[in-house]
Image (tube, rainbow, N blue to C red; front, side):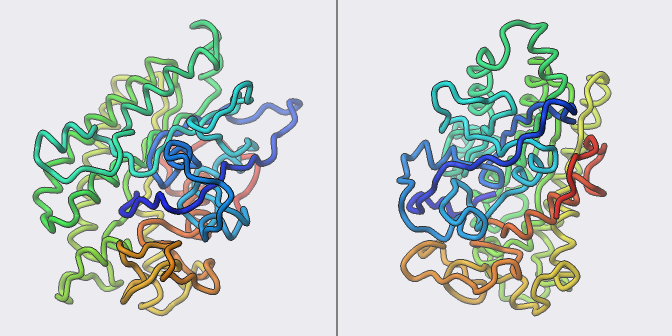
Amino acid sequence: MNIFIIFSITFACGVFGNVNSNVNPLPYEAIFNFGDSISDTGNAAAYHHVPKDGKSPYGSTYFKHPSGRLSNGRLIIDFITEAYGLPMLPAYLDLTKGQNIRHGVNFAFAGAGALDMNYFIKNRLKAPATNNSLSVQLDWFKKLKPSLCKNKKECNNYFKKSLFIVGEIGGNDINALISYNNISKLREIVPPMIEEITKATIALIEEGAVEVVVPGNFPIGCNSGVLTVVNSGNKDDYDQFGCLAAYNVFIKYYNWRLNQAIEALRQQKNHVKIIYFDYYGDARRLFQAPQKYGFSSSKNETFRACCGTGEPYNVDEHAPCGSLTSTICSDPSKHINWDGAHFTEEAYKLIAKGLVEGPFASSSLKSPLFKIV
């Protein structure tokens, strides 16, 4: 999910992690990921030709340099690949000739929505910042497919051992409408969003996918960027933890509708394992008991972005993280939120752990080779 698309920040392409020996088969031979800035490992950076040699707080904690990721370090997808003994996924738009892509590719693009730009134009709504939507990413996969396998039998055998992750996607469709401060307007885009996610999932199954993850969305009422944009002065709008109650209720509604669609797909495609990632429950626990997970226990600090400027959440869309007036907290691992729209590496690690090791994936993924620590 990305409210402020930061193209002035310098990125660099992702680095690779460990690759297991061929002696012991990997649980997944490859992972193919689709989504937005929550899992983009360099596509937006490559698309916008952002220089790779500048200074930026993005990537500073783990990579020690910009990494194409909108966080201070690794993302959920990075922790998932590491847990399964795979290298970090290269970004599709940053691939080089002859590069080994046997272990998967990342098609996620920062700012992407589930819906195409035409939907927003047709309905006279504020649109996401890019049209590299889910359908565009699916087209990228289809173009790349001949480089992955040569015929139907080879593709089926290969994809049978692969994991496909369709999202999180849809956060930017929702974020584009947050400024309207109208929950009814948000509810109107839920059916077309879920239709697009369902169509993409079916298309991947038709391409040979037999294990597909479809994540829900996060508790946006706890998101520092959303809290800043809504800026409600009515204390009754907030729950006991400090989140905007109505926006979290909306996300629960969205996730419920998405689960209905997933269940229908399971009935239609009973040869396919379709997994739901409960991003809502996985992330919400961090805000409900921050101290339990090593974050600051101060209510003010719980929602304060590590990198940014402005009060009360250290978020200002006109002076984003990485701008001249922004500041960086002394210890990002004590913060849940990184820059207003995105989580810190520490929060992403805990969320990934809840997905890979349970209990926030339904059905469960295959057993990982490594624990997320």
